[in-house]
Image (tube, rainbow, N blue to C red; front, top):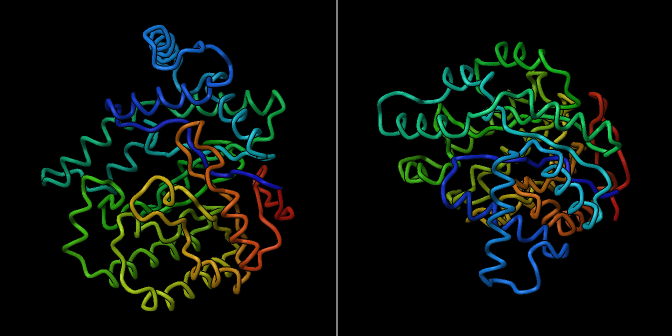
Length: 333
């Protein structure tokens, strides 16, 4: 089976770059429909694309039409099972949780991250939940999830917040170390001040705590700290990989092969690295597939390559989660 178990409907900030990328997604998903006419890049074509963009902005990202684009594109790419997760930091119900654990003070980093949070935390979670439930009711094979950031010391608060919602699964992830959002391009200069082996040790300590917290069904992109190509020699990381794999196996928590870093970020490598994947397989850690797409035309991107890598590594099956139950299926197209 081929599946994509980690993709998103939208994420700010809402810059002109975001507008351009949304327009490109609409262009790509409508390319075969004829709605844009047969004269690409003509004034008439641009007017039609502008109308589609206006409709998308008015309807928002939780419309049935926007969700349908993901499922249609996914089916065209052979995907049989979907897992939709939006980031918790998008939802106003969870904003206090992030404000308590992120750096949002009057330092330069704090002001930058406050600016970011103001522009991404823009919706209640309820329209998202309703949208995915409508798709499920219509027969789409989709699991409803969220991607929740792990912060040490925030486990009880996060657990209480998540318990309010009926979800098929929860993906845990680490995007912040001591309150610093390390995958924000605007903060990447801070890597130059860090001891990289120590920084990776801290990341993997967070991952191990997340695995043992009991909050998560899957831990995402285990080595995403490499996002901007700041990483030590991998031989220094191998013992850390072993510790993470052991922790995941002991906690019976799955992970993913996430292609998002390979096609969207400077590192141009999926998570986990091939060496890390070997160790996860050796420990018997269950795994799923993830494009981490944020637009419908990216769903399934590089998953064929990911499946080939899993097969070469020795994996025979992948997993998905439905109603909090993990289901293993054969790896194959």
